[in-house]
Structure formats: C-alpha cells, structure tokens
Length: 161
Ligand code: ADP
Image 1 (spheres, helix red, strand yellow):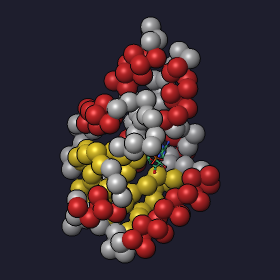
Image 2: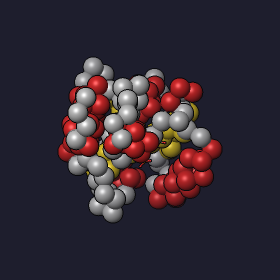
Image 3: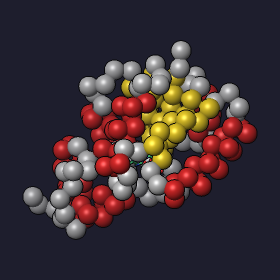
Image 4: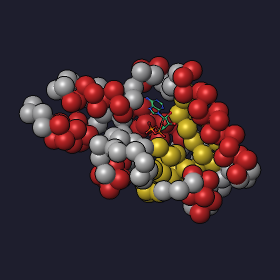
C-alpha cells in the first residue's frame, strides 16, 4: 500500500494544488496533505484557516486527509507512515529548489521517495502569491481558487464584491 504526503504552505489552496491532489490519487492509496506551520514565514492565513479551507475543498475526495505539521518533512512523512512525498512542478524555476529538496530528503531518509507531478498547462502560471496580489487589488480570482477561498481572500483584504 502506498501512502503519500503532499506538503506545502497552501496560503491559500488554489486550483493548481487541487489538481495535484486529485491526480496524486491515481498513484497512491492514501494522500495526506501536509500544511506547513512555518514560523519563519508570515502567512496571510493561519495554519488552522489553511487546514480548514483544504478540508472543505477536498471533502468530496476519498482517501485524502489534511494535517498541519512543523519541523522536518521527512520526519512528518515517517511518523505518518508514508513512503512517498508528492510535489508539483510548474516551470523550470521550481526545478532547482525541488531537486535540492528531494535530494536532501533522500539523504535524510532513503525509504521515502519524492515524486513530481507536472502542472496542467492551464495552471502553470498559478501560485498562491499571485492570487493574493490580484485579490488584494480587488481583481477577479474565481478562475484561480474555489468559491470558498475567493470569499475568504476578499474578507482578509476587506474587498466588497
Ligand atoms: P511551498 O511553500 O512548499 O512551495 P506551495 O503551497 O506554494 O508551498 O506549493 C505546494 C506544492 O504545490 C509545491 O510542490 C508547488 O510546486 C505545488 N504547486 C503550487 N502551485 C501549483 C500549480 N499551479 N500547479 C502545480 N503545482 C503547484
């Protein structure tokens, strides 16, 4: 049985993340979405808010659970008894960092393999940061994030629709 962890900040979850979550289910029996509680970063949404939004937008999917974590990803994966880490690759700019991370994670725990899924073309440009930028200026974001996230983003920025 395969169990994978899909880690990230998810600040907030986008259709790009959801696509990776859905497609991961074809290569693993269980998927744990790991929401990083990184105290060095100052996210727009608290870890609880990010976890709750992910739970809402994945509630139709079987075999997906959402958990927060801090510390080393390989430790979280090992504690969760996962044998795989899933990451999404958008452009070549993601590649160098992802390659380093997968190699260091392999050096830390060689039992856990990192698997990359390449983004669908329509989501290649999509990142949580750009969506936040557009939302903050009151722009239309319903092509990028689920309706629930649209509402939460506008609320955060005090945008009235
Ligand atoms: P991180 O801070 O770890 O990069 P993100 O929430 O930005 O966290 O992304 C989590 C994972 O999802 C990363 O592997 C990232 O490459 C991937 N990802 C983000 N946006 C997209 C997208 N539009 N298409 C495919 N993968 C994506």
